[in-house]
Image (tube, rainbow, N blue to C red):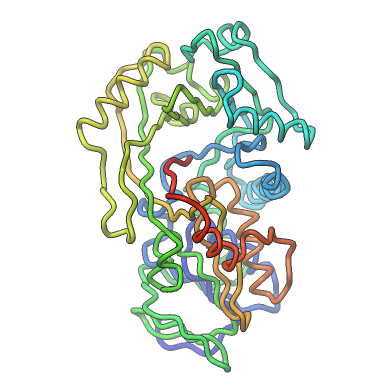
Length: 391
């Protein structure tokens, strides 16, 4: 990239939210759109990577998220139609926990309030229909009929290709060094030159604090570990027979997805990693002890699996204290920020990208007021320590 003329919108980051924002913005024929990504086109460094993500409408985060998840579901289907690729496998999602478990109660209340399609499974029904799960006598389940598994890398590739086909100019392997708002617009300085834009969308995930120092106190980088297990009979863990799942046993939380590769299924639980101020400190793999512990625990929860994970990867995400995201624009309305997805943002990525695109186009979408930066900073002052986890 050499120094360019002024453009309408620059999107910094081409990951989950950035790719979706680029896709939406590129549909507006009167806008010139530029995307800048520090890595290549679809990579393994971002929070979205890892083959699959759990999608659920009976969200444990509460009913205020349901309209956003329903809109995201519509947009996932639209992305599939426009790209011709399968992204969203609607195989359902099982939430398994002892009766009365708090997250399960929230999900059940959400289902009731929004009349979401679902099934309640007793302990006996759960054991009969999904014998892959080794459950205790206290366990019950909610089957979210519209839940399932998302293919994140396929989704990002599809959104970026559609954005380019619509005229967006994308620049990869280009790091943004500085963003400066002026009366004449926003100056975006990169390792490959400078762009002058009317508005800028910052969708740089765990790297957001490097571009916006005011987020330093708000955000923490938490580690998310992913592991895949090999069953003796992979057919039992195929999407047609094994839904996406969340499992809670005491203080242990597992989440995962069916076998999309034909031989292993995803089953993850996070070690007790510390939180970080910057991505640079995040570990790049599980320790041997961590993998042994995860495998041993998995054998207690899933039937016919080898205790040795056959694949593993380590990722990260920017968290806020109460796990609500930041979706806001600056006082001069030139810089839009979407960050702090807190480990559960990918399922909402299309709606968040749409919010960002609407804000960048000068519109005022109906966004939860709690997502404002001012609200997030207030939460920082009133809430306790950061909590781990995510899926």
